[in-house]
Image 1 (cartoon, rainbow, N blue to C red):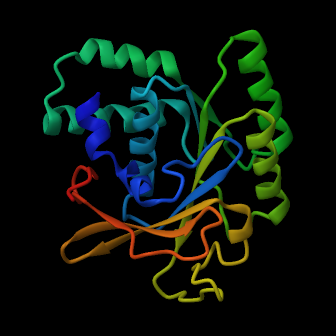
Image 2 (cartoon, rainbow, N blue to C red; image 1 turned 60 degrees about the vertical axis):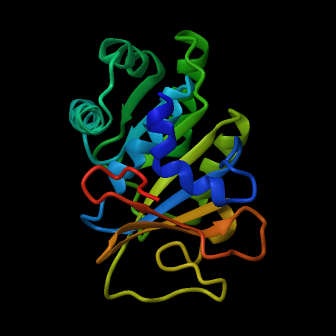
Length: 231
């Protein structure tokens, strides 16, 4: 999967100080509705899976079958763009290294997640390297939820990626340049990345880089159709 990894959206991390999010840490992808948060998160998932790491995808809005269909569609787009030659092997790798958990109707809480992760680890011998949490409402979720997720990242020695919905009409940022809705939570995140549509493409921009006090103009341009890195 070298071809995919070389054009993965996670190439943005080549511009970061540690080149990765790392176990025990939280990362967040900020974008407006319809820009491609879920697609980009699934690309992050593929990057992990194709490196033979194990991943749990947590959905708070869609059931497992719908999430699997997202993966199938994006995988077909990747296959068409990159011309995979070992499709069956890749699909086996996805099935073997990915779990999907759905917490619908506001049923998500940190204690329940911890129990589920313990069951995966102890009963199914599935020890994830990363979690993706898609659909958590940053406007309504209390700070204790994010503190609990960071605790889980440390307890299970994994990294957690989340998505945050921004709005065109809300331009609030904090003194460190972190925009709404992460402006009051940025101390809990090690990496903060913004997904922005522009006339020349869709850009990933690194807004926070671990404890690095200065952020250069670190960005990666993505194909607006496949979300693969162009530059």
